[in-house]
Length: 197
Image (cartoon, rainbow, N blue to C red):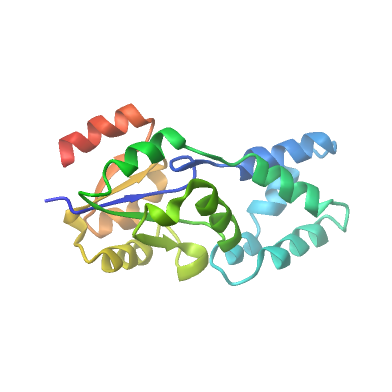
């Protein structure tokens, strides 16, 4: 029997703004496509930010240093955050499930970005469990962050469903025997969940 539903945030609960935001900043400033993204996302300091080991301010300082100071960090941050959008259709559907299931989020998110999204989406009122890398210092796809979420919800893996748009991020969920739904859109999710719950 399914007792808990867990959702990823990026491109599930919210349209991810980091990648398009960085690309927009590159275009505005004539930076070769992908060069800033490589600095902002593919270096160790991005991982440290998502694990909550450094602050957003420290992270952006690392990015600026990598570009020898030639970046307007306030503008870059503003553009990234502007590109995030809550998936309101999905959130409204999830609200209809709240009386029947424990609801949770399992996500690789820095504290600051998650706080922004949670506030914008009203997630504090909806989700009972938040296994977010920036707070719990664990990252997907490792099994530990999923185990943390299951323990918080007081359910077993087989009593839960994990919803993510990325098949490459579900190994840890599978290792915890969670049921998996790969998210494409709300209608598809409703059909897949109907078969499980």
